[in-house]
Length: 168
Image 1: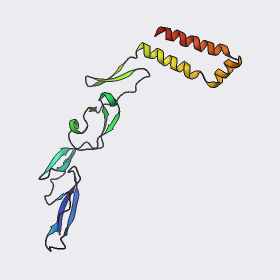
Image 2: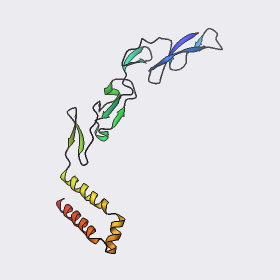
Image 3: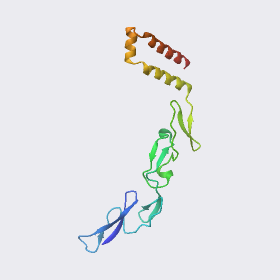
């Protein structure tokens, strides 16, 4: 019986197992893929044991940790660390600081290792208000205006939109 030590495709230690004896060469053992006869060192808190191909080494283990993206294209999105290694390699452009809720119209930025909220552009606030007014113009309201039962309401909304567009 020969004990071997298994690791995954990234070299991360999985556990020990038993190698099978060769059916063609009694007394010789078949070492499975991703396994070695070299025993790993003992466990170390916050580290994974990784086989480099020749020796076992410790690697930072942040797997399962939640981080938040500081990259422009995914800013503020939650990221789960899935690989072992230093955070700058396995979770670059992330922070452990949770991104704040972003009020409508504001913009989230990452500046000087802190989250910041940029105030809304006044033009964006006007566009948002126009969109709110337009979303209130339902098929029922249009039908009432066409039938003449409540055309004042629609006229007022149109005047509001026209006045807002004049401010852009």
